[in-house]
Image 1 (cartoon, rainbow, N blue to C red):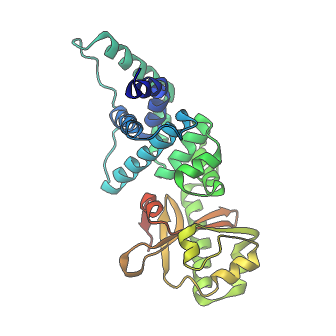
Image 2: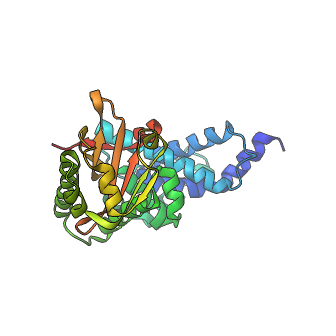
Image 3: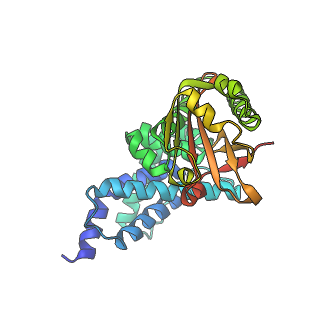
Length: 292
C-alpha cells in the first residue's frame, strides 16, 4: 500500500465523525461535505510523521474550516434555510443511496430544533458548544482551535448551553449588562481612573495577552485587580466598543485597520478575565460588529 492509499484508508476511518462534527457546525450537508473534503485536501498535502493523533488533527482542521465558513457566511449576511439533505436519485448507486439514508438519520438525531438554536449562535460560540457539549472535546483543545484561553472558551460554551436550554437572563438583559461593564471599563481606562477600574474588576481577575500584544508592551499574564487596573490605567484611548464573536468587547483599529481585540469573560457584575489578541491570523478569525 502506497502513502496516498494509506492516508485515504485512515481518513475514511474518521469520515463519519468528521461529517457529524461539520454538519452540527454548518447545519448543511453540502457545506459539511465541503469542509470534510477540505480536510482531506489538507491531509493529502501534509507530512503525517508528526501527527500523533490523526483523529484529533482532522477534527481540528474540520473545526477551523467550519469556523471560517460560518464567519464568511455571516459576513455575506446569507440567509440559511436549514437542512439541505437532497432527495435520493433512483439512478444513484446503492452506496450513494445508503449514505443519503444515513445522512437523513443523523439529521433526525440532531433535531431541527437544535439546528435552529445553533443558527442563533456566533461562530466561535457555536464551535465551543458543539465540540465540548456534543463531542466532549476538552476546553483546552477547543481553546487551541479558537486561539483563545480555556476560560474564554468555557464562557462561550456556557452561553451556547444557556441558549439551547432556554435558561438564564433574557439575551437583551445579558447584553445590556455586558455593555455597561465593558463601557465602564473603557471609560475608566481612558480617563486613567484607577478606582473606577477596580470597581469593575473581580479581585482575582486574570489578564492574558498573546505574543503580539506582549510585543506591544502588555504582560503575557497578570493576576489580581490592582495589577490589571494599573496596566490599563490611561491605556485604552484608541479602543472602541464592538461585538466580538457575539459578546461585547473592545477593538483597537487605528486608521481603520484592526490591530487588536480585547475579549472579556464576565461573571455577575464583574470582569473575571481579559484576553488581548494581536496576532493577525487570529484577528481574522474573529466575528466583529462595531457598536455605537
